[in-house]
Image 1 (tube, rainbow, N blue to C red):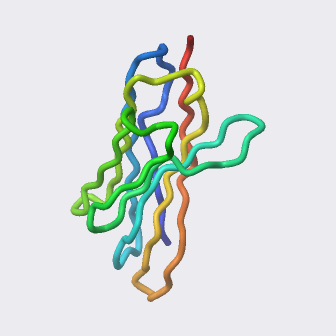
Image 2 (image 1 turned 45 degrees about the horizontal axis):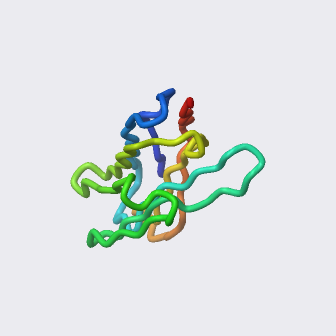
Image 3 (image 1 turned 135 degrees about the vertical axis):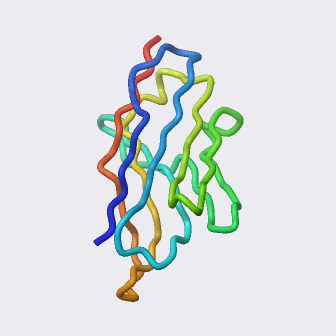
Amino acid sequence: QVQLVESGGGLVQSGGSLRLSCTASGSIFSIYAMGWYRQAPGKQRELVAAITSGGSTNYADSVKGRFTISRDNAKNTVYLQMNSLKPEDTAVYYCNSEIRTLLGTRGDYWGQGTQVTVSS
């Protein structure tokens, strides 16, 4: 069994900052890519940022220069530092990770989501 647990969401004013964290635990053999997605009301879930096990990153155009993704492989944790937040960043943010379990299976796992609300 593998679990992803997110933390760090909340309410912030426009221009403010938040840092999201997501830790994977359970029967983990190895973790490949980790990433953050978000879903605003009435919209499809979209990729915000992703990072490979080697540290290569990619970002949605809408967050480039404002958000930074990083990971601590020793802690099985991925972070999303969000600066200069805008009201349009308001969404539920989900952690995603591609994991190989101790049983040898490999698949995508999701966290439960954390709400980020940016007030104008």
